[in-house]
Length: 361
Image (cartoon, rainbow, N blue to C red):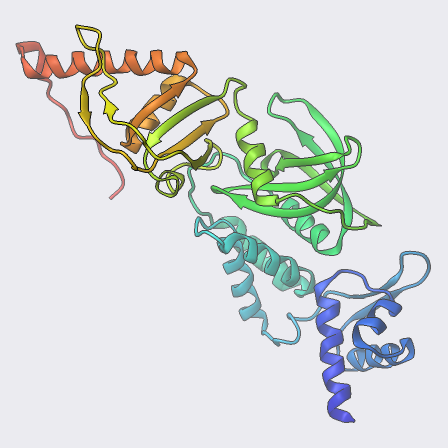
């Protein structure tokens, strides 16, 4: 009997850690006991020093208060600070798949840290940083508020600044906080616009949770929706490029903020040289029937930048759209031809002495 009671108390503790607020009936259902047994188990936890707080009335229930070091791991203050600082760094890490777990763990740890340990962890976390290629920064409190709201299934209100600088207030049902290419996004149902929306966390000026819970809706593929939203936020003129390469190979080098990659039809005819010939005819240079191709779709942007990015990929271009992109390829090709010709015939003015610059050691 004692072993069963102890096991149930630990399960109760884990439930209180997993969400901000529980009603007595919900806890009883999860533990398969009566509400009266739940009250006795909560009294046992309080006797052990765990601050289980209770509130009455509509929207009331039980919650685990601050003042204890991450039960039931029983971390000491120094260990708890070390874990919290490590999670702050992990949340900013470029390692794929690490950011989401670090934020979830931090949202559980932060509320139950003793006030002194919490202040120390935040002070150390504020002095440390991870350099990334992104300019946008996310406020830690905003990240934690949204992570908890997703966990608890409660509505939030955002003070949001759009790309054009316009500010608006948004009422949302948050479903997921995720990192894509080093930048954080919120996937949520917009209550006023009655549609799914993606928000950049570095544009959120303030996030305020409510106590209103929402019934989960059927969601689309969250990863695919967010990636499509990111690419759709760029310039309106789309660009399409067909490359002689596998979709997997190209997708590994295309950030979600740039475009999407899909499989193309295998080559079914000899490839012709796409460069212009004096006689106006394309010369067949190779046979590549059956070779893999892919289609890169870019929702918009600067054609000059797109051509430079294609050149870095190094794969053969089979077709492009719109014509402006083809014209930009021809313009840059002419520039490279001119530069190559200049280097092939050096002149006294083509030799330049370069001075080394000083940089980090």
